[in-house]
Image 1 (cartoon, rainbow, N blue to C red):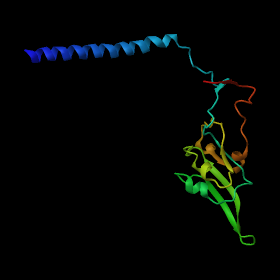
Image 2 (tube, rainbow, N blue to C red; image 1 turned 90 degrees about the vertical axis):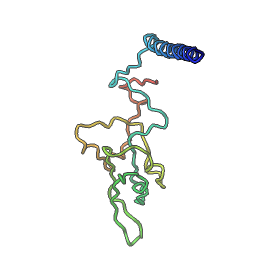
Image 3 (cartoon, helix red, strand yellow; image 1 turned 135 degrees about the vertical axis):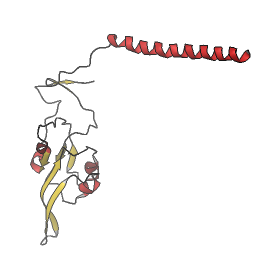
Image 4 (cartoon, one colour; image 1 turned 30 degrees about the vertical axis):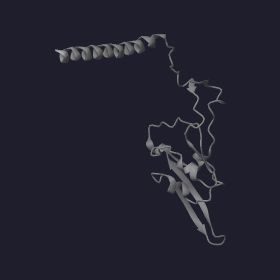
Length: 160
């Protein structure tokens, strides 16, 4: 008899606890109509990226010493560094540098380990393309400085 009373008591506590959780769920659901929408009209409004946002990589050709530390630091060995060795001055001469952003995971290891700081992350995030071969950037396209969202007069910046 006492065990059945204890079982009913436990069952009643479980029912009250379940009702409390269902009530919390309903409170969250009923709170949503009171919130303002966070929709951004994308081409005309853009979200400001955070301070440490990892966007497209910027490359400075003149600073690069072709040490290939970026290739060794990359988890997928992505940057392609083409160089020739000049015997007269005993230095590497950088011929070309390219990164395929269709494969890049934007981890930032290449930038972190670069000894000459010739690589940096920008806040550019619009890299979509219909052809994946267009995402293979060489030193010319990596060297151009993108327009910041803050300085683009055709776009209204939205801070969330």
